Length: 128
Image 1: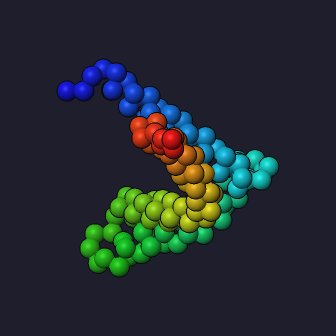
Image 2: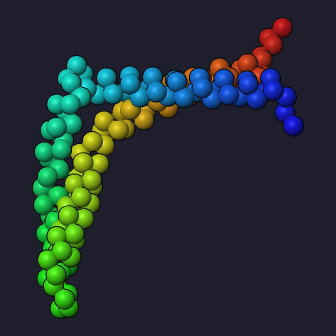
């Protein structure tokens, strides 16, 4: 078993890694937004995703129309709502991919520097 000190060291490292990742995500978000409020950008992206939500709703309703069996209203509504939700989520994910990529890049950069520092602590370089 590992000593309590080693476990505490790993927990401290994990906490610092998570904190640096969160800080990197914030810096990546701020770099992408360039001073614009986040709510404005997300509202624009959500409005742009409504077209795919409508297509998804039509696809869900089309499933009920194509099936020759029992055409119940409740089943049609459920399939239309599910299709709409899937279409909206797909569209919103696609529209916000630049923001997400910027946040991931910032987090990876910050976490990489923390990992490098941790490695150097465990493997000191002695030039003498």
